Amino acid sequence: MARRIIAALLVILASVLAPFAVGALWAERTITSPQAFNETLAPLAEDPLVRQTVSTEVSAAILDAIDAEARAEQFLGGLSGPLSELRGNSSVDSVIAAAIASGVNNAITSGVDSYVQSDQFGQGWQAVTSLLQEQFVALIERDTVDAAVTLQDGQIVLDTAVVADRVQAQLAERGVPFAGTLDFPGRQVVLADAPNLQLVANALSVFLPVAAWLWLVVVVMFVVGVLLWRPRSRGLMWAGLGLAIGALVTYVALDLGSAQLVNAAPAGYSALFSAVATTLLRFLVNALLVMLTLGVVLALAGWLAGATPFGRRTRLAIAGAAHRWGSPLAGSGLGRFTSEHPMFVPTLRAVVLGLAAAYVLLADRLSPAAIAWTAVVVAGALLLIEVVEGAGLAHESARAGALVASATAPGD
Image (cartoon, rainbow, N blue to C red; front, side, top):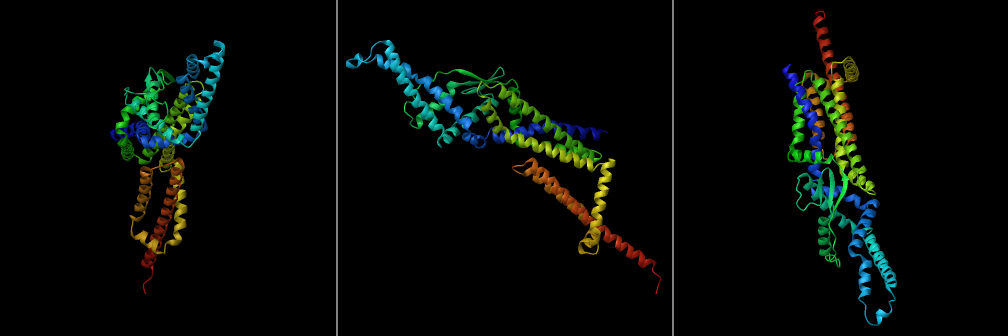
């Protein structure tokens, strides 16, 4: 009884920790790694929506900082001598200033748009994603010093002064005229209401330090729990169900959380938030779908290997057919070898299952399709092993029949 309780607790605890292990591993390999983060978001530089949004926001920020009309009016007011006679009254000054400002603003907007649509935008986008990666890490580590993005009372708040300082420094280093003289007034902008994001940040701050080995602990807990369970097939079924349920619940929660973040975005930013969230989370979503598929495969394997009437009938039908297919090989070398080495078939089964487990645990990029095809290949290999076992059994049966016939034959 105690053994079953321990096995059940291990499987339940592993099922609960599995989504956290997957999420922490994703965060460690995607968010905390500047190179992986930049590579993940790099495709967004080619997204027309991203380019249009960046062009619009950058142009607006520069136009607000320059205030071309006020500068034009100041310039006109400082004219003296013969040129001052060309001006009539204040209304004329306003018209002239507005015309000058319109030309300057159009030139700035056109220049920014040309830059955003050029190949050079990709380099600038890398600078933006590098800054964004730093802010994600600061958010998780609760480091608010020089942080452009913070969580305040369930809101994502952007400090534009921090961003402006970073951008101005980069523009000045590249020799952009007047980049260092522009005055961007700092202000805090609420990007989105995300009360649950703090819970996510808190969870990541706890699990990130153990992300490198937490998944291994989860695997060991599953394996030990299944080995302690009696019968083991039932333990395998429950382990698969726990893995699948954990993945499904996490996937639904992630989908709802992403939708909530997109819906809470400022007007006009929902599509941009959706594009960034979809791109940034695609590897995590894939990992959860892999986890779900693997859980379903393990649950089905445990169910078919169990003591249920359907499982027994299915196994007997498959084994009987495979043994019949292998019986013509009874007189071959394979039949004799299998008959003379009883551990040959169990060893083959262990090798096939071990290779499949190693592939799942060590593969760099898995997909639900890869898990499904692995299950198909394993099932096919186990079926072939049953055919080999049938050849050995047929050889033993033939040899036993020959011995009986020899023993009962009348003496010469």
